[in-house]
Length: 359
Image (tube, rainbow, N blue to C red; front, side, top):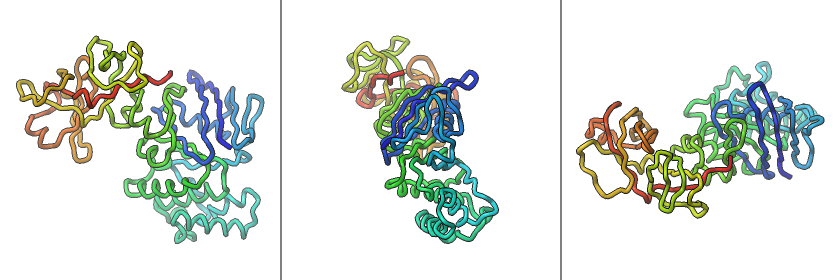
C-alpha cells in the first residue's frame, strides 16, 4: 500500500501545510527553494519532527496521527542524507550489518545481508575498510547499502548527491536508479532537476510551506507553472492572463504563443519557452525572419553554460529576466557585454501557454 501524508506544522513564523500520496514502489521528488519546507516534510515522515497536525500512514500502518506517533526507530524507514554518517569505528561491512542487526537479525545473518547489499551497490571490495579509508562516493555507496539492508518500507533521500564531486555523483545517481526500480517507496528531496528526472516518477514543488505544483516528473519540468520550477528546468517563464493567441502580461503586452488544451481565456496563465528559442540582436542589426514577439532589453549577465554562453537580460516588460543561449562566436560577433542594449525575439511557435498551478 502507499504512503499517505497530511502534515500541518508551525515553527515560529513558518507554517507547513501539505497533503500527498506516494504509490507503493514509486519515487516522489520534493522540489522547492530553501526554506520552502522540504526538510520539514522529511523530518515529520521520519518522526524527527512533531507536527501539530498530522496523519501519516504507510502500507496501511499508522505512523502518526493528531494524538500520537511512532518513534523513529519503529517506523520502518530508511534515511539517507548528503553526508554518509557512517560509524567511524566500524568497517563498511559492520556499518551495513548494523541495520538488519537493529531489527533483530542474528550477527551472522546480518553480516550475510550486509555482504549481499555491498555487492548490490558495487562496494564489496570495501567491506573491511573503515570510513576514513573511503572516498566520498565509496562512503555513499556503503550508506545506501546500510539504508536498504533493513528492508525499509519507506526510503527518505535528503540531497543524497550534494556532497559528492562531479565524478562520483553520476555513478551514485545511476546506482540509485537501478536499486530503486525494485526498491521501496521513496521520497527524494533535491535541488537538481537531473536527480528528479533520473529517479522520480512524480514531483511536488513546495513554496512557502505549500505544494504549488505536482504531477509526473517529465510533464512538470517540461511545462512548469511556477517561476521556481521553470528556473530549475532551465526554461523562461512569463506570467500573465491567457488570451486567444497567447498571453497578456501585467504591463498589457501580448506574447504570442500556442495555448495548451486546458487554457481558458481570461484566466491566469504562464508562457514557457527555452533559452535556445530566444534570438538576440543588437540595435540596427539584421533581423532574420518575422517573429511576432520582440522586445528591447539590456544584457545583465553572460556566463558559460556547457558549450554555449547563457545571456541574462533586464529591461521593461516580458523581456526582463529572460535567458538566451548563444555560441561564443555569436557573443564575440555582436560584441555583447553587461550593459549592451539588445533586442530579443521569440517565434510564437516556440512559446507554450499553460494555466497556472492551483495555489
